[in-house]
Image (cartoon, rainbow, N blue to C red):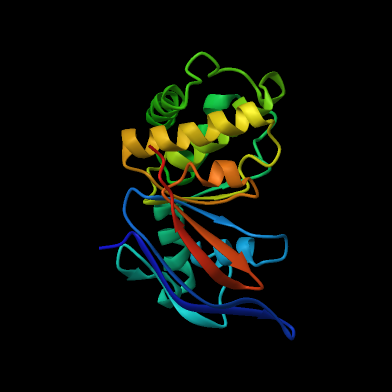
Length: 226
């Protein structure tokens, strides 16, 4: 079974069609990238398949569950437990340390403070920040802050991570390191990723690349990462 399957998704804003009859499937443990010019519909598509927005038509199945058919409260619960999000801007809480920022999703789920901090510490170790647990965002580099955001998305152990331009604010060295981290997490945790990027070189590091233009997927490329 595919991790995610989207069928015939379409979305209009007014008379403008942003996503136009898009279908795609992502296998369990796969990393795929979505590229294309600004305004192609990439972020809107990610919001639709992540249940952050509702399409005008189409369906999205994650691990066989049609998430768009769930009542709003169940859909929110499903999204919070099955989907992790990483954005270009990390949205870390400035007054919290790295370990506290990563603990937030677990606290929201009702996990006890001690257990949440232990799980957050483990995940920060996984992303290479085991020595920065008590540092606040202002004390971390841009690349380190984004790793904290990735750890925060990963700590509830979601089925899939959706990343919207996660390297957009990073220099080329940090961007490459972050993409390598995604590959490591896929190999180490079996994590599935869907990533939007403007960087063709980094897109080629993923398993497959979808190219969007004018709201449609116009090309699909299998990448040879060896």
